Image 1 (cartoon, one colour):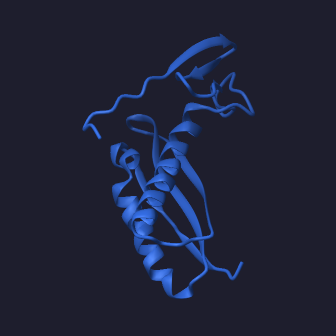
Image 2 (cartoon, rainbow, N blue to C red):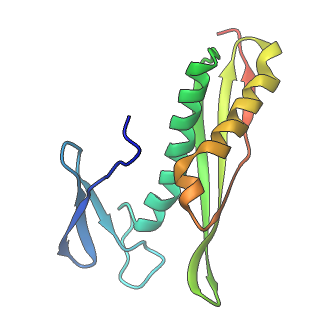
Length: 146
């Protein structure tokens, strides 16, 4: 694997503070100003949503890679993330992102190991490491016989 990777996206304005985000080989997304801003739109992905989502998705994919290499068996992974956008002296800034990953495992003796792997994923998440905002996680691990 190369030490340098590039990711190309493009956005095309459509109307009324909306556009279409695309990248070759990927599904396009309608994007817009969020509803909290003047002339913003409900129900459309905003840069703020995508910013928070990028940290959340990166944590998941990093965890999946680490779990696979560590041979951790789990039944389910899901998460929720909340980003806080605040007015600061520097202007509007995403001041923090809290990601709440939930991992369901079968073996109750693996709870601590699972938490350790989630912490490792947080440490190595390249998107979070590239952000100026503080990014933290609040994990949950459940044990299920399912």
